[in-house]
Image (cartoon, rainbow, N blue to C red):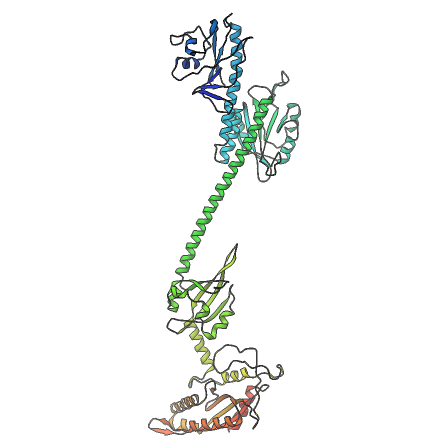
Length: 636
C-alpha cells in the first residue's frame, strides 16, 4: 500500500487516517504475492518509519519493536514473511512511503526484489506527485481573482502541475490578434516575449498544421521550421536529432487552444487563447495520459479566464456604475443648489397626463417674487396665476425653448410682469417628463417700456391718446374692404381698451349709418376750441395749459366706457364713439359741447370755452386721415 504525507482528495481515494491514502492495489513482486493495508497514526513509531528516507525491512527494529508488531493485529507476516517500506521521492520532496507486504515464507526479499520495488516506487512517486501537482494547479486556476493573476496562474500551473519547463499563455485581443499575456519557467523568455503580439492569421495557420491530438496541436520539428519567420513570439533553441522515436526535440511545438463555452452546445466556442508548452520533464513527447491532462487543463483554464474576465467586466461595470452614480448625485446636488439658490425664480411642473402644468416644485426666489409659500404654489399651475389678458400668450408658449413676457398674480392681488423661459427635462427611457420654467422679474423694465410706449402714444399734457394713437385705433377697426367678404362674422376685440393684444381674425365691416334706417356706425366727433389763443394772450401759457387739461378731463368723464378721447392738435380734441346712429351722434356732440362750455376757474377768475364740432363716420375702405380731415372741416 502507499502512504502519503499530504493526501489530496480526488474523488477516487479513500481516507484511512490523517496521513493514509489508498490509491490502488500494489502489484505483487512475485507470483502469489499480494498487498495489505495498515493504518498509521501520528506519533506512533511506524509514523516515524514511514517518514524515513531508506527502505526498511521486517528485520529492522523500530522503537524497540519489530515491524510486524508495529503493523498491528491482522497485518503481520505469517509464516515468516517479510515487509519492505520504500520511500516515494517526488520532484522536490519525499511524498510518502510504499509498504510492500509479502505472504510467502519460502524466502526473504532479495536485492533484486528491492530494485524492482525501488523502480516501482519511483514510477509511483512521479505519477502521484504529478497528480498531486495537477490537481493543485487546477484548483489554483479558480482561486485567482484578477484577470492578470489568473493568466499567470495558468502559466505557472503548466510548469508546476503538468511537468513542462516552459509555458506561455497567448490571449486573444479585441482586434483578434494574440498577445503574450503570461509566461512561466524561464525568466529570460518572460522578459523577451511578454507583451508581444502575434497576428491571428499566423496563429490560425499554426493551429491548422501538424498532428491533432484531440484539441491539442503538435507540430514536430520536421514541419515547424516553416514557422521560424512568422510574427508569432516564440522561444526555441536548436538541438541534436532525437535519439529515439518519441524523444522531445527543442524545436517541437505543442499548443493547447482554449475555447469559451458555447451557448449553442457546439463542441468549441470562440477561441480565447492558446497555451504553448515546451521541454517536458520526461524529455519525451507527451503520451495519452499527459495529452489528456493538458487538454483538460486547457479546458479548465478557459473557464477560469472567462470567469476572470467576467469578474473584471463586472468590477469595471460596478466601478463605472459607482462613478456614474457619484456623478449623478453630484449633478443632482449641483442642480438642487442651482435651483434653490438661483437669483431668478424657477419652477418644475408636470408635463403631460391629467396633471399637465401643475407645479411640483418652486425655488425660494419665485416664492418671494409672488409672495406665496412653496406649499401653496404646488396647488397651482401657471395658467391659474397668469393675468386673464395674458392666458393666450401662456398657452401659445412652446414647452421646449419657449419664451414669453406676461403677468403673474401675486398673493396680494396685484400682478407682476415676468419673463418666462421653458425647457423640457427628458428621460432617455420615458421621454419628456417635466417642464422646467425660469421666471425673471421684469416689472421695472416693463414699466419703463410701457411708460415709453405711453409717452409715444399719449399727449404729455393731458394724458390723452395723441394723433398717432388715434390714427392707429381707427385703423385697427377698418379694413381695405376688398380683401374681405361682406358681412364677415363678428367677434373682433374692442380696440379702445388700450391693450396691445391683437384682434382676432374675424371682422365686422364698419359702414356709415343711414338716416332713419336704424343702422349704427363708428362716429368721429371732432371738437375745436374757439378763441383759445386769447386765453394764452390774456392769462399766459400756463393758464392755457390748465384750460386744456380741464377740457380733457371733462371729455373723459363725459364719454362712455370704451369710447376714445384723444388730443388731436393744440386746441383740437376727437372722440371715437362706436355703435351710434346719426341722431345719437348729434346728441352726444351737443352734450359734450355743453360740458366744455361750463365755467373754468383760472385763479380768482373764470372763463368759458366754446367748441365747434364736426361729425364724420368711419368706414372700411376709407383711410383714417381722410375721415379725420372730413370731421375737422365740419367743425369749422
